[in-house]
Image 1: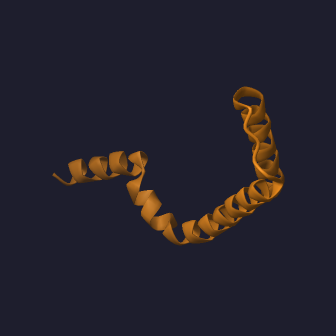
Image 2 (image 1 turned 90 degrees about the vertical axis):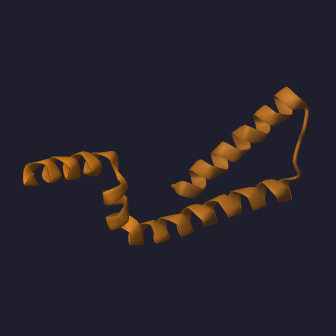
Length: 74
């Protein structure tokens, strides 16, 4: 599903770029852009799982929760 979304996005982006700016990229460049974006998305998702605990502590909800707990201690 990710590859389809990225492909549609880049094709639409190239269409708009051609219609509005009269600039066209070669097919090989578009394929490289699609490939790079899919690879980055997959790599980012693998790394993100390792930082779930850290993300919990950095969310605004957790700050409010920690403030409530610290106020109860006083």
